Image (cartoon, one colour):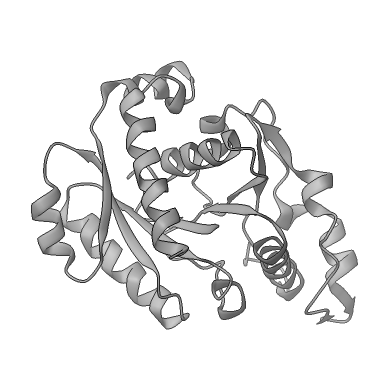
Length: 247
Protein backbone atom coordinates (compact mmCIF):
# COMPACT_ATOMS: atom_id res chain seq x y z
CA UNK A 1 0.00 0.00 0.00
CA UNK A 2 1.40 3.40 -1.02
CA UNK A 3 -0.44 6.36 0.54
CA UNK A 4 0.19 10.08 0.05
CA UNK A 5 -1.41 12.25 2.74
CA UNK A 6 -2.10 15.91 2.03
CA UNK A 7 -4.18 18.84 3.27
CA UNK A 8 -3.76 22.40 4.43
CA UNK A 9 -1.42 23.17 7.31
CA UNK A 10 -2.60 22.34 10.83
CA UNK A 11 -5.32 19.83 9.94
CA UNK A 12 -3.50 16.84 11.45
CA UNK A 13 -1.81 15.22 8.43
CA UNK A 14 1.27 14.20 10.40
CA UNK A 15 -0.79 12.71 13.23
CA UNK A 16 -2.75 10.54 10.81
CA UNK A 17 0.37 9.61 8.80
CA UNK A 18 2.18 8.51 11.97
CA UNK A 19 -0.81 6.55 13.30
CA UNK A 20 -1.36 4.75 9.99
CA UNK A 21 2.35 3.91 9.85
CA UNK A 22 2.36 2.40 13.33
CA UNK A 23 -0.82 0.39 12.66
CA UNK A 24 0.71 -1.18 9.55
CA UNK A 25 3.96 -1.86 11.42
CA UNK A 26 2.05 -3.70 14.14
CA UNK A 27 0.89 -6.13 11.45
CA UNK A 28 4.52 -7.01 10.83
CA UNK A 29 4.71 -5.03 7.59
CA UNK A 30 7.83 -3.12 6.55
CA UNK A 31 6.78 0.53 6.73
CA UNK A 32 8.59 3.57 5.32
CA UNK A 33 7.19 6.91 6.49
CA UNK A 34 8.35 9.85 4.38
CA UNK A 35 8.25 13.41 5.65
CA UNK A 36 7.76 15.43 2.44
CA UNK A 37 6.34 18.53 4.11
CA UNK A 38 8.82 21.32 4.95
CA UNK A 39 6.62 22.29 7.92
CA UNK A 40 5.90 18.78 9.14
CA UNK A 41 6.75 17.34 12.55
CA UNK A 42 6.44 13.66 11.67
CA UNK A 43 9.60 12.76 13.60
CA UNK A 44 8.22 14.26 16.81
CA UNK A 45 4.87 12.53 16.43
CA UNK A 46 6.51 9.16 15.77
CA UNK A 47 8.67 9.63 18.85
CA UNK A 48 11.93 9.52 16.90
CA UNK A 49 14.80 10.52 19.19
CA UNK A 50 17.00 11.76 16.34
CA UNK A 51 15.52 13.16 13.14
CA UNK A 52 17.13 11.69 10.00
CA UNK A 53 19.07 14.08 7.77
CA UNK A 54 17.10 15.72 4.94
CA UNK A 55 17.93 13.82 1.75
CA UNK A 56 18.13 17.01 -0.31
CA UNK A 57 21.05 18.20 1.85
CA UNK A 58 23.18 15.06 1.64
CA UNK A 59 26.62 15.67 0.07
CA UNK A 60 26.22 12.50 -1.99
CA UNK A 61 23.24 13.98 -3.89
CA UNK A 62 25.43 15.92 -6.30
CA UNK A 63 28.03 13.15 -6.39
CA UNK A 64 25.41 10.71 -7.63
CA UNK A 65 23.09 12.94 -9.63
CA UNK A 66 25.38 15.46 -11.31
CA UNK A 67 27.68 14.36 -14.13
CA UNK A 68 29.36 17.61 -15.15
CA UNK A 69 28.50 21.27 -15.82
CA UNK A 70 24.80 21.04 -15.02
CA UNK A 71 24.26 17.73 -16.81
CA UNK A 72 22.65 15.26 -14.42
CA UNK A 73 21.55 11.66 -14.22
CA UNK A 74 17.81 11.08 -14.36
CA UNK A 75 18.19 7.82 -12.38
CA UNK A 76 20.94 8.24 -9.78
CA UNK A 77 21.70 5.37 -7.40
CA UNK A 78 19.22 5.44 -4.50
CA UNK A 79 18.75 1.79 -3.50
CA UNK A 80 20.91 2.10 -0.37
CA UNK A 81 19.39 5.34 0.96
CA UNK A 82 16.72 3.88 3.27
CA UNK A 83 19.22 1.56 4.96
CA UNK A 84 21.88 4.25 5.33
CA UNK A 85 19.82 7.25 6.38
CA UNK A 86 16.49 6.00 7.72
CA UNK A 87 15.77 6.23 11.45
CA UNK A 88 13.47 3.65 13.05
CA UNK A 89 10.87 4.08 15.78
CA UNK A 90 8.02 1.75 16.79
CA UNK A 91 8.66 -0.47 13.77
CA UNK A 92 8.53 2.43 11.29
CA UNK A 93 11.50 3.72 9.28
CA UNK A 94 11.36 7.50 8.87
CA UNK A 95 12.90 9.39 5.94
CA UNK A 96 12.94 13.18 5.48
CA UNK A 97 13.03 14.53 1.92
CA UNK A 98 13.96 18.11 2.75
CA UNK A 99 13.54 21.16 0.53
CA UNK A 100 15.39 22.57 -2.45
CA UNK A 101 16.46 26.15 -1.79
CA UNK A 102 16.23 28.19 -4.98
CA UNK A 103 17.82 31.47 -3.99
CA UNK A 104 21.40 32.28 -4.88
CA UNK A 105 22.51 28.95 -6.33
CA UNK A 106 22.58 27.78 -9.89
CA UNK A 107 20.79 24.74 -11.21
CA UNK A 108 19.04 22.57 -8.65
CA UNK A 109 18.26 19.80 -11.08
CA UNK A 110 20.52 17.23 -9.30
CA UNK A 111 18.60 17.57 -6.00
CA UNK A 112 15.25 17.36 -7.76
CA UNK A 113 16.35 14.35 -9.82
CA UNK A 114 17.65 12.61 -6.70
CA UNK A 115 14.44 13.10 -4.69
CA UNK A 116 12.23 11.95 -7.56
CA UNK A 117 14.43 8.90 -8.14
CA UNK A 118 14.29 8.07 -4.44
CA UNK A 119 10.49 8.37 -4.30
CA UNK A 120 10.05 6.27 -7.42
CA UNK A 121 12.35 3.60 -5.99
CA UNK A 122 10.64 3.27 -2.59
CA UNK A 123 7.15 3.40 -4.12
CA UNK A 124 8.02 0.48 -6.40
CA UNK A 125 10.22 -1.61 -4.10
CA UNK A 126 8.90 -1.16 -0.56
CA UNK A 127 5.84 -2.82 1.04
CA UNK A 128 4.11 0.08 2.83
CA UNK A 129 5.01 3.71 2.08
CA UNK A 130 3.18 6.59 3.76
CA UNK A 131 4.09 10.11 2.64
CA UNK A 132 3.24 13.19 4.67
CA UNK A 133 2.89 15.76 1.88
CA UNK A 134 2.43 19.50 1.73
CA UNK A 135 -0.76 20.82 0.15
CA UNK A 136 0.95 21.54 -3.15
CA UNK A 137 2.07 17.89 -3.52
CA UNK A 138 5.14 19.32 -5.28
CA UNK A 139 7.27 16.21 -4.76
CA UNK A 140 4.89 14.13 -6.87
CA UNK A 141 5.49 14.06 -10.61
CA UNK A 142 3.72 11.80 -13.08
CA UNK A 143 6.36 9.11 -12.73
CA UNK A 144 5.96 8.89 -8.95
CA UNK A 145 2.21 9.51 -8.80
CA UNK A 146 1.48 6.45 -10.94
CA UNK A 147 2.97 4.29 -8.17
CA UNK A 148 0.84 5.85 -5.41
CA UNK A 149 -2.27 3.80 -4.58
CA UNK A 150 -4.23 6.58 -2.93
CA UNK A 151 -4.18 10.28 -2.09
CA UNK A 152 -5.70 10.80 1.35
CA UNK A 153 -6.76 14.41 1.90
CA UNK A 154 -7.13 15.42 5.55
CA UNK A 155 -9.41 18.32 6.39
CA UNK A 156 -10.92 19.96 9.42
CA UNK A 157 -14.49 21.31 9.60
CA UNK A 158 -13.86 24.55 7.70
CA UNK A 159 -14.64 25.90 4.26
CA UNK A 160 -10.96 26.75 3.67
CA UNK A 161 -9.93 23.14 4.35
CA UNK A 162 -12.57 21.88 1.91
CA UNK A 163 -11.35 24.33 -0.74
CA UNK A 164 -7.80 23.04 -0.23
CA UNK A 165 -9.07 19.46 -0.59
CA UNK A 166 -10.71 20.31 -3.92
CA UNK A 167 -7.52 21.96 -5.16
CA UNK A 168 -5.50 18.88 -4.16
CA UNK A 169 -7.98 16.66 -5.99
CA UNK A 170 -7.46 18.66 -9.18
CA UNK A 171 -3.67 18.55 -8.85
CA UNK A 172 -3.78 14.82 -8.17
CA UNK A 173 -6.08 14.24 -11.13
CA UNK A 174 -3.73 16.21 -13.38
CA UNK A 175 -1.00 13.74 -12.41
CA UNK A 176 -3.21 10.77 -13.19
CA UNK A 177 -3.89 9.78 -9.57
CA UNK A 178 -7.48 8.54 -9.49
CA UNK A 179 -8.01 7.15 -5.97
CA UNK A 180 -8.56 10.28 -3.89
CA UNK A 181 -10.38 10.16 -0.55
CA UNK A 182 -11.01 12.60 2.29
CA UNK A 183 -10.73 12.20 6.06
CA UNK A 184 -12.37 14.66 8.45
CA UNK A 185 -10.25 15.42 11.51
CA UNK A 186 -11.23 17.27 14.74
CA UNK A 187 -14.86 16.43 14.05
CA UNK A 188 -17.69 17.44 16.34
CA UNK A 189 -20.36 15.77 14.24
CA UNK A 190 -20.06 17.73 10.98
CA UNK A 191 -19.70 14.67 8.71
CA UNK A 192 -22.92 15.05 6.72
CA UNK A 193 -22.40 18.75 6.08
CA UNK A 194 -18.79 18.16 4.99
CA UNK A 195 -19.87 15.35 2.65
CA UNK A 196 -22.30 17.75 1.01
CA UNK A 197 -19.64 20.42 0.49
CA UNK A 198 -16.97 17.98 -0.67
CA UNK A 199 -19.05 16.90 -3.63
CA UNK A 200 -17.32 14.13 -5.58
CA UNK A 201 -14.51 13.51 -3.04
CA UNK A 202 -15.56 10.47 -0.97
CA UNK A 203 -15.31 10.94 2.81
CA UNK A 204 -14.08 7.58 4.10
CA UNK A 205 -13.78 8.38 7.78
CA UNK A 206 -13.64 10.95 10.55
CA UNK A 207 -11.64 11.44 13.72
CA UNK A 208 -13.35 13.13 16.67
CA UNK A 209 -11.93 16.21 18.35
CA UNK A 210 -9.91 14.97 21.31
CA UNK A 211 -8.25 17.07 24.01
CA UNK A 212 -5.74 14.24 24.51
CA UNK A 213 -4.21 15.02 21.13
CA UNK A 214 -3.79 18.65 22.21
CA UNK A 215 -2.19 17.33 25.38
CA UNK A 216 0.28 15.29 23.34
CA UNK A 217 1.51 18.49 21.67
CA UNK A 218 2.38 19.84 25.10
CA UNK A 219 3.88 16.71 26.64
CA UNK A 220 5.63 15.42 23.52
CA UNK A 221 4.00 11.99 23.83
CA UNK A 222 2.99 10.36 20.51
CA UNK A 223 -0.75 11.01 20.17
CA UNK A 224 -1.48 7.42 19.11
CA UNK A 225 -0.20 6.29 22.51
CA UNK A 226 -2.62 8.40 24.53
CA UNK A 227 -5.76 8.76 22.38
CA UNK A 228 -7.88 5.63 21.99
CA UNK A 229 -10.34 7.53 19.79
CA UNK A 230 -7.55 8.42 17.37
CA UNK A 231 -6.31 4.85 17.06
CA UNK A 232 -9.80 3.39 16.70
CA UNK A 233 -10.78 5.95 14.04
CA UNK A 234 -7.58 5.59 12.01
CA UNK A 235 -7.83 1.81 12.22
CA UNK A 236 -11.28 2.05 10.64
CA UNK A 237 -9.91 4.31 7.89
CA UNK A 238 -7.05 1.87 7.28
CA UNK A 239 -9.46 -1.05 6.95
CA UNK A 240 -11.59 0.86 4.44
CA UNK A 241 -8.52 1.83 2.42
CA UNK A 242 -7.30 -1.76 2.35
CA UNK A 243 -10.68 -2.91 1.09
CA UNK A 244 -11.10 -0.11 -1.47
CA UNK A 245 -7.64 -0.47 -2.98
CA UNK A 246 -7.44 -4.25 -3.09
CA UNK A 247 -10.92 -5.01 -4.43
